[in-house]
Image (cartoon, rainbow, N blue to C red; front, side, top):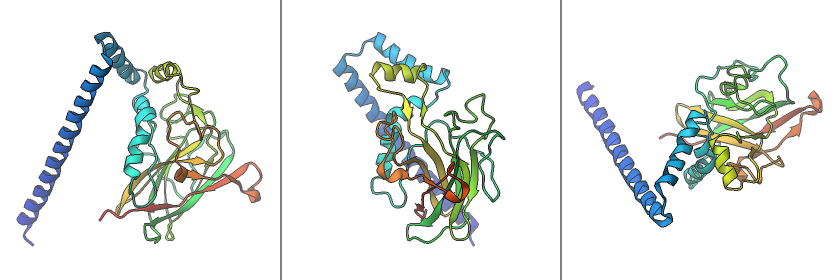
Length: 275
């Protein structure tokens, strides 16, 4: 094997990738700048209005909202564009509350919870396959969700770190199951910069419907980021983030063998191969 030649090929590929990425940045940013200049001319944006707008954007970071404003207004459109012609399961929005490094759990899988965790029990299960329907063993599913009060761990100071966050794996048949709680609808912050802007726009409410966040990964397949909703749930037809899509629904059913306060929901994922 000519290791020198292999290294040269690898470096050439990396350089080509960097060059393509740089051209993409230049194309997108330059076009965005032109669009914004035309927008400012069209609406005769004054310096005072410009400063008000930048104050809101900077304020979201200072208020700890990070990407919340952009996720509410723009992220669903980005996922729609990515899903156009997509093979395999659809993407959903990620939102601002993901943190890498969640605990890797062992079977039987239960998301980390406080001893007195509120909320009805939920068994979330399904199967991960490739786009030909063949099972994918060892796929990692990274879950995170709000607690019964609509609060996220690693964000809300009253919730222990990594509560209701965890990573599990599919078995040899591509099957998975994790026990958690039924997530509630929750209200995004009303008094921060995002809420102030939504109020000015006349938003009817600030609620997101109940949902589960999941990232699905496997070394041989493209990563999938999604957000799943529950059919018939409140606010699914008026999500403040406008992110609910028909193919992102699952359904609650009672797991009668465990009692009426225990539920189950199923969702199967199909991943596209990287190559």
